[in-house]
Length: 167
Image 1 (cartoon, rainbow, N blue to C red):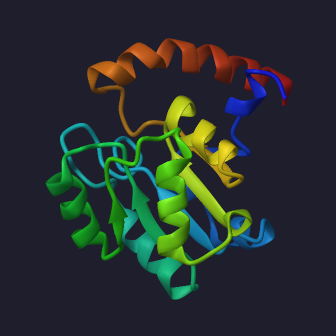
Image 2 (cartoon, rainbow, N blue to C red):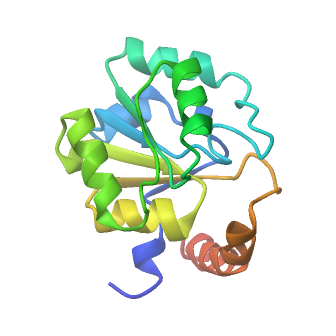
């Protein structure tokens, strides 16, 4: 596996709401670890419109959910967790396996039955692939990012161009 393919997502969607129950079932996914920033909420901490209904639908279908965020701002993740009524892990240190293993333990599922949904190749996708989980990339909710993410986006764009040209 070369440098790029470790960072290729297994699936790519416009946003989290496009990930359907049928898609997850077809890949034997029983649990989701979900990034927070630019996946569930925008830069101003607004939850993506319709995501509460999406979460409720996943819960009703028996899909286990947990937020997995790199932020060290516990209150921010806790607020989203409380609103969506799903557990969370913050300061996950993605792409290190540490946070993904914590998520696997929280969901009580083997890694092969877990998908990770996030907006970044260098954290969410790379970490999911390293942890043996199914990686799903979504487009960021908006362009506004924190500084470290802004720095990574050009490299991610280059990798995504290679990925999309291979399809």
